[in-house]
Amino acid sequence: MSNVRYTDAPADTAEAIEAAEPTDDILPPPEYFADTLAKEKISLNVDARAVAKFRAYARLHGLKYQALMNQVLSNYADKRL
Image (cartoon, rainbow, N blue to C red; front, side, top):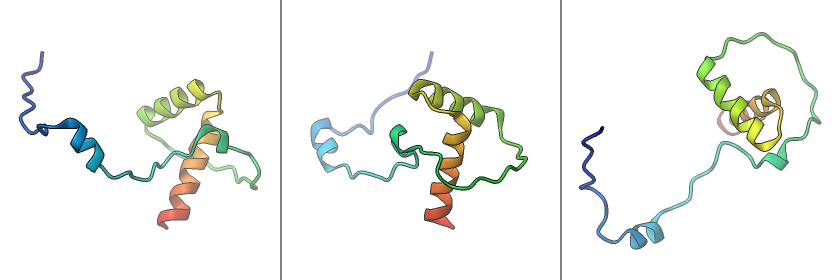
């Protein structure tokens, strides 16, 4: 059992939520995934934990996990590289 103390919580949670600012989500909505671009097969070593998270998310939303991983990587490359 943890001895976490929440002493930094704002006195008025509703006020804090109102003041919160949205952030960009790295994952697009599930309906965004369309297999329309040319693909190139590669071999890539990926952390097992990351693959498990992608598989779980894909399963939950009826997607193919490799397509999901490709889309996240493409979005990152488009925005950050």
